[in-house]
Image 1: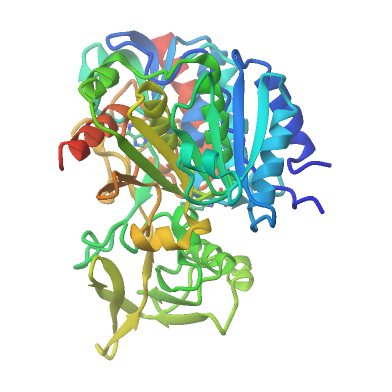
Image 2 (image 1 turned 180 degrees about the vertical axis):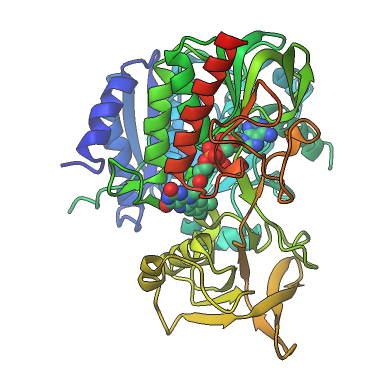
Length: 215
Length: 331
Ligand SMILES: Cc1cc2nc3c(=O)[nH]c(=O)nc-3n(C[C@H](O)[C@H](O)[C@H](O)COP(=O)(O)OP(=O)(O)OC[C@H]3O[C@@H](n4cnc5c(N)ncnc54)[C@H](O)[C@@H]3O)c2cc1C
């Protein structure tokens, strides 16, 4: 028996048959696994058994410092979803509930090698010449959160300057406190700029540009 | 030892076309606005009558997305709201109708002999008939501090935000089913103290829900009390001021979260000036789902239908689609 129910496994197997290119799932955990680290690792390992397009690598947060630094991992559990190269897609905390869909979305994006953004959105983001860090704070019971996470992941895939993190808020209370996350989805861009709620793709892109231009 | 099973929710399978691909300017026999239970049911019935149909909505599922558990929709003695939505959507997607999601409709207007539907994103569509199935949204208290602290402790989505209030003191405003559903969510995630403030002297929630949330240690009831103000500490909620409606005495409760569950208002602004509404903004619809304007039908929570329930909304959606079909036949 795995970490996913049998119904989910059956359905997932069908869906993942549509994956096009390879998808690397990289999990960061540690020897003495933290409360949700084991679940995150087992989740990724089980998902990976459902399509031959997946490969899994597990790193130790304390020992594999080179990888930890290269991927910019500062907390665990962390999952990187990578295609041919790292496109800045990160999941911090366990992607359960509604956020499991975001994990699948990430796999879809990298496997299709296509961010699936509209030409207008790409146009808005085109002048971007600085690094952008987007953190989307979520809870697993929030039906609106994956809508925002999906767009952030697409931005990260489309633009090498953007890194997008899904952060499961309840697993990182210190971050909830630091960024005053009292409602989800909450998006924090480059530490200082933030907004709550769902924005359509275009407006979200405009907020990213506003954030880099200093608000 | 393996970790415990993890609960995950599979998103609706992406159809080839991503939302937003229905080009502006298209013409239809029927446009359904809203994809809650009423709009989705209307979609299935319209498709089976082979009407050229557009289903346009901000989201799929409407209020059911905010319902953790549904125990009164026949065929499922218990089902999670989101799972029920998925089953509805799956059934709709088997049919060849256009679906445009992530679109807010701002206006439905007459353009004789047709109707025009305009979206916030600037698209427009034409149609011979329209079903308005836009449901309801949370009502606001309209007290000082409510807007200022929205997203900073004031919440209208207990399902979303309850997990952020573990170990915190909170207030739930309201006394109906949604208020007690919020109480249940907050108890489950480990809120420390839950103050329930209701303007009426009694509780309106179903007895089964009240029983489920009974917890004298955590729950503090303030019946016959109204909220006067939501106060803050820095940029977060820190307290609410409530007033006893009889004695007029006020009291300050120290809370970090305020969940407002005082009922709903109709999403009927898009049809203002077009169809007749009652004083609560509900669209007046007869038992055939007909509105005051021939060719415009309305279904579910947005209408004057007496009970606001999934099964009622679904039934309404059916009636509206069949009535639109009849209208097109006999026009
Ligand atoms: C917390 C909670 C718990 C509930 N529990 C139960 C329960 O256990 N059992 C039960 O039977 N009922 C329950 N209900 C009531 C039930 O959810 C509603 O009666 C039902 O969802 C109404 O369906 P509807 O299709 O009419 O509208 P809604 O569900 O409100 O759907 C409206 C749709 O229209 C869309 N929309 C709105 N405005 C626009 C616009 N301008 N442009 C485009 N799209 C728009 C929305 O995005 C949504 O998709 C509950 C409600 C709540 C809030």
